[in-house]
Amino acid sequence: MRCGDAVDPGTDRTALAIRHVAFEDLGILAPLLVDRGYCVRYLDAGVDELSEAAVVGADLLVVLGGPIGVGDAARYPFVGQELRTIAARLAQRKPTLGICLGAQLIAAALGASVTPTGRIEIGYAPITLTQSGRSGALALLGGTPVLHWHGDQFEIPAGTVRMAETPGYPNQAFAGPNVLGLQFHLEADHTQIERWLVGHAHELAVHRIDPRSVRADARAHGPELAVRAGKIFGTWLTQLDRAALHSTTGPEGAHSTSSWR
Image 1 (cartoon, rainbow, N blue to C red):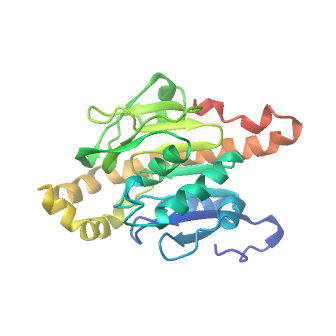
Image 2 (image 1 turned 180 degrees about the horizontal axis):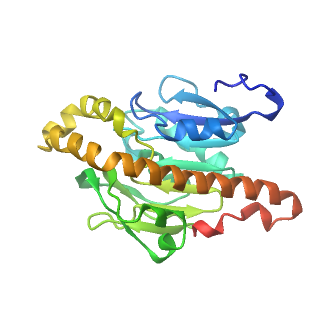
């Protein structure tokens, strides 16, 4: 649904996605948002203006992944503006989801350290949930492998709770009031994995990762992961709706996403 296409425009909710490369899009999350009455808009970082009014004004912000890092602001000046607009939104406790680079940007905007690790984690592999993760919607993953594609790491921001880890990356997810950060890619559409393999061909070659193995794992794990990821995103979106509904009853209702923590 494009913004303004709804039968009743007065009921539209806007989901704004900041995209860094064309093939790392909302994936399976896009139809879920449309089904819930959101009109979906993309802003392409480095091309479109990331104005504070647009970023803060959206009902939901999703910050997507990409092959740059938080520390690349000198080479990619839009990163600094992106951090500032995300920070302005988070200061208002407005619903915000970050995936991979997006989670790192949210962590940095909340004052947490984000650093390169000198290694990579690429391909399908399971995550281990913390006690907080096991008590929330991420538990719906079970043991299903998720898609990893990162080399940087974030510390857990103040006011959020660590949800998941892997052997090489102790901080894979965090959650707080109206905010969720995922280092891994629950949103990726496994039927479109070829776009990732072509777009990241150089990185795969440098790290001697055979695209055929990632392609095979996408076929093996992608369908089940899509079902589970849809339920996880659906649960989070439902919790946001409940928090918004209860926010008119007092300050406690405004932060009722604690079941993710």
